[in-house]
Length: 178
Length: 178
Image (tube, rainbow over all chains, first blue to last red):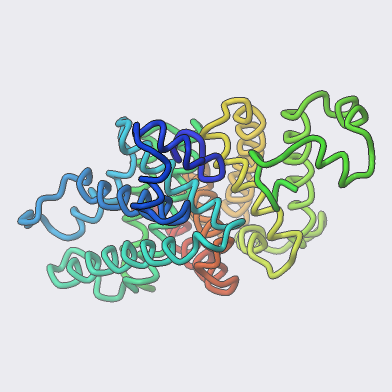
């Protein structure tokens, strides 16, 4: 429902009606509206880890895994689009609603740490230059993906274009530092 | 008011009250709510051209102008922050509201053309390699700035960090193509 109507349009009674349960039950499980939004964001985050299509025992070079992980954000698939819309919406809403910032900060940090670790893995397996600043590169690649995602959701660029830009940016970002 | 409450929270009667005029006068000038949002976006866009602090007759190298233009999106200044919030909000709302897409597309295209021209100027004055794809680089730099802007507005990164990332990404984006 956040993907359809945004965070600010989210009403607990609508969620209850959609789920076919009482408002009381929603409050019992999620405490308040903020708890509901936090849980939705955590759900979306867990689901994103699934659709990147990287198995636990995948031993491809880390650089290739990194590209697959970032490119997976752009797929002609309802769940992927919905995930992306929920993230964009919560980020936009956090500008106005400071109550959303703790969960946003925590999940963003988890994502950045995962990306930075993947870059470090690539430095170990020799597919990424040792001189790359893994944290800074992770922040820029994330910002790029988020920016492209906004344009993709708004219909300004296609899935293929978004993926091509991710790959081009990744190749530039992972060049040896000057 | 869009920067404060978002597009979806925008009510014509609140705008009329804030401006101290009647709703009828608002409708007379802007026709409808969509016309009001479009005008707000155009206003914000024109204002952005002012705060980049680049004079018409500035003959600095194009590459330097490009960096100043992009870095100018991050300033500890209420108008800059407001501009950024309005853009982010209209982009996010365009995911749900197709009526916002025409003006968003038109203004985005104008910005991309301006950036690509500045890159082409740099290719003429020798500060940017001829092998850079000006349109693709403009799209990626814009997406990066928009992504950083979302994190900056949500308090996830500081103004200085955002500017440092813009400069680092610009330097990578403007390397000669492999």
